Length: 167
Image (cartoon, rainbow, N blue to C red; front, side, top):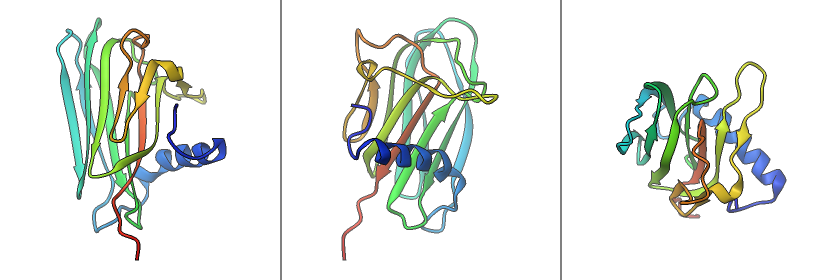
């Protein structure tokens, strides 16, 4: 299942929100944060993390082939502090690395929506999502499925609900 909650219109809204949330003003006095990092081939497991307030997103992967690729991670919190978003992607669109594994984990929030893509939108083209059987979504993680993942990854999007007490 690509999104743990809501119908297709809810998923579409959350996907749109995930795309623009890092650009919106951040909650709790902190703005969104985008950072560049290198995805390095060689088969070793590497991680990259960003923290914004009480929330952290960590991208862990192993890849083979080619040379380092520049990727970006954006994290943001909605103005009402109810949603945390984390997006990881290759700005050039398609990665030429062969991913042997990947996992994105959020701390401080529970995943409401997540999607992984084999190709990220660039130059007017659309994102190409992974097939649902290639990855799995848990309460706080999105990860490849052993034996099902076809080793192509160019983008991950997560929208997570923050733990807010109802008044």
